[in-house]
Amino acid sequence: MAGLMCLSPLIAEGRLPDFTELVEQSSPAVVKVNVSFKEQDRQGLPSYRGQLPDIFRELLEQQRRSQQDRPQRYSMGSGFVISEDGYILTNHHVVNSADEIRVTFSDRQEFDATIIGSDRRSDLALLKIDADDLPVLVLAPEDSVRVGEWVLAIGSPFGLDYSVAAGIVSAIGRSIPTERNETYVPFIQTDVAINPGNSGGPLFDLEGRVVGINSQIYSRTGGSIGLSFAIPASVALNVVEQLKNNGRVDRGWLGVAIQDVNQRLAQALKLSKAQGALVSAIENGSPAEEGGLMPGDVITRFNGSSIIDSGDLPPAVGSVKPGQSVPVQIYRDGSKRILNVVVAALTDSGAPPSHQDGGDRLGLLVRDKNDSSDRGTMTQDGVIISRVSSSSPAAKAGLLPGDVIVQLGRIRINNKNDYLKVVSQLPENNPIPIRFFRQGRATFRTVQIDRK
Image (tube, rainbow, N blue to C red):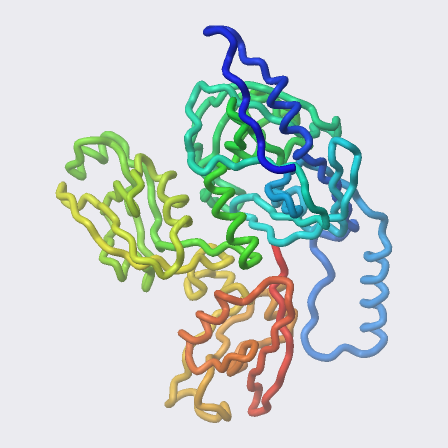
């Protein structure tokens, strides 16, 4: 069974909509997502470098085994089928760190699900079940939702299967920073009653299209108070395509710190309107610097998208494929200019490796070798580790400052540029061989970047 019929028009003007037909047609494609995972200490066991005596190693192994034997915890959310062959969309936070995932349909059929890919920044995850000829829902191909229009949600709030709630769109393009102060999703705000368990479920327009994926609520009580937020379908379409093809999401990175423009700043900067993203700082060596951007510039358009306030810029930049050259419209000294900027790839840490206190995706800060001061390293190529972050993948692998990395995976590392390129493309949850020199001795170990 494929496709979804549209909701018939309202019978009479001014009459409240009748959602019965939409619910009957859509419910078979909505699923309840049941998640189980073993209770783990959030801090985990400490990472020890070097060799440990056998007795201490045995004690550590006993601790790990005792953690693994702890009873399982359970959680639940919602999701929906987006293809007949079993692809299901839900929230990242619903399935993050899951040990087992099982989805249940309205007809009580149950399937084990596997994670194809999960993206923390958009809070989306793509699951797969072994099934065919499934009912599907259609994601709206563009952001056509308008403030004030009716929308409807289907999900399992508090575990109450296939509950329906309706409301209106309260606002669009809401910029809500995550706990890491990231704003890559222009959320749809609604007054639909969304509660724990609705996460990952669909938000419909009156034509039966999925215009959003329910993700967050704002509440001081834990329940709905009329402030809920959904991920736009246009964002989901991009994320789903990348997760299906690559298992991860690549985003563009510009390398600027920005702020809103108020009326006084607009006057001081000779702007006719108080709008745009004011560049307050630029990373050294970033795409912004190389593209000619300067502190004090006001970005008003990026790759064809209008930038009304600073919250509009991160989603616009993040949607650009790394390596693509895009036009950036700025105002500088009261004059409009067009710059062409080549967008780079956003790393897992959210910024270029060389400018993060915590290091790169492996937890390392590295530098190129200096022929005069780095003699005696037994190799003319490679990069020297300057710092290793605690509890990082590199620390768990036993890497130390002064080690010289010469190979990652099957790729030889000749310099820092080689290293940064390889690290940005390393897969998650896969052990990768790393070859390095320490005190003149070549060593192979494995390093693994765990999915956040």
